[in-house]
Length: 383
Image (cartoon, rainbow, N blue to C red; front, side, top):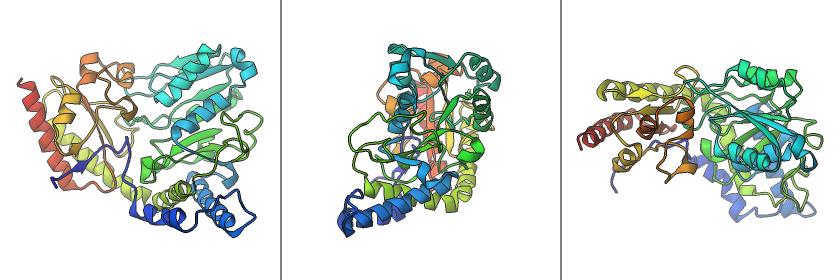
């Protein structure tokens, strides 16, 4: 098989072998429904769910009862946004977010807008960050919910979540954080951040696809958050549907593993990322890095290569997996809304590559990728 190199970790990550090992018994041997606690099969499954819930909660500084299992961060985001706007109060609700959010934030917000909710979408600076003063100004008008991501999925920029959440707290406004790209890569503590709701996804940090969770601060459920799925009353009535026990076990194990190695992995990936960045900047004329250069994810590199088309470049890197932006926008040959919001021209935005390193990335792979990108970019510019 030809050599393959994977640098698209913001789209998904490989499932850690230890996670697979933890999940398999709950596909083959312990297959009970955790809701059926009247027999041993159900109790075994329920115990596994409880242990995994504890792992997730401890990893983000929450209490076990504050963790609601979902099918993805997209579902968690929809529950947080649509569930916080009561149907009978839609026309009097107001939601604040920013231009660079993921589509799983912007789309449900726009859906609520079409139903009568008021929205305000804040600008970002050239690094992709929201100014705290802009949020303060926005909250002078009565607001239902603020939703701002922890880490951008394209450029890796980190918002100052504790500062922004504190502004919302001063105005008694519910604060939701999409942390799908942050959990497992930087320290996340819901109590220190002082957020009310936080979304995460297992497959972004070596867990299984189709598994997410929503942190719901104690006291928020019921009073400020309602379910969007009905039929069964699972997860304290907030998420109906039979629990995905193997997926939940996998998420719990991914959290346990990340807790033991997050700092080591992050330092190593940041070093490799910096090496890749310096090689591309030194060898490709006009190359520029997008996103905040200080407050960013350790495994992210988003770089514009003028005179090229990012999609054509990515497709020409045979055996090397990189992307031009969000996986949910794959196949759309149009400029990234994130890069446009940061002030890039459409042409420069279209000539962009996103690299996402994993804990398995090696220095040799980085050197090979850098050489391949330089070679292909030079060829494309010569056409």
